[in-house]
Length: 165
Image (cartoon, rainbow, N blue to C red; front, side, top):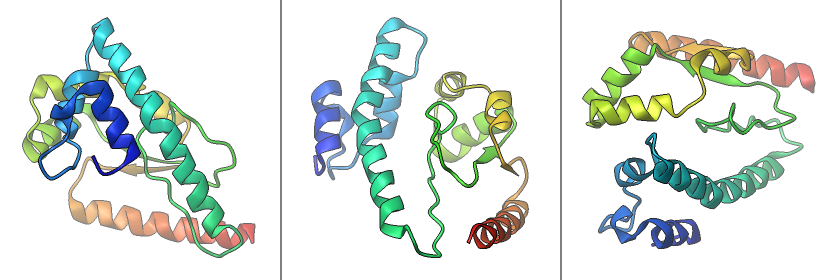
């Protein structure tokens, strides 16, 4: 593996999670960590213990690198509600009907429907995520609708940045 995080993951979960090109086989990891059984829950906890510290270090590095500039740092990770951060100017939730999410995971990522449902079920509820949002992007529509929402959101973030000085 190319990174210390991938090396630790391979040590914990086996070399089968690393593709021949050295990249992570996300589907192989998902098969191990998304499930209702105690073994999967333990595997997910181990995965989080490996990934989260490295992720937090990188987030701190990026924020520090752009402190005092007019740049906007966007933290794009799916578990913000589960792992909240203090001091964020905004929290954006991309919301989608769970049935549409399942269909897209199956159709666009080739996931097994049962695995897609397990992955969604392992996350905090849609309602919980929405209560923590300062901005919501609805992803139930087509790409043009999504682009329009993202453009409006970016304008709102620029205005927020400018208002904060």
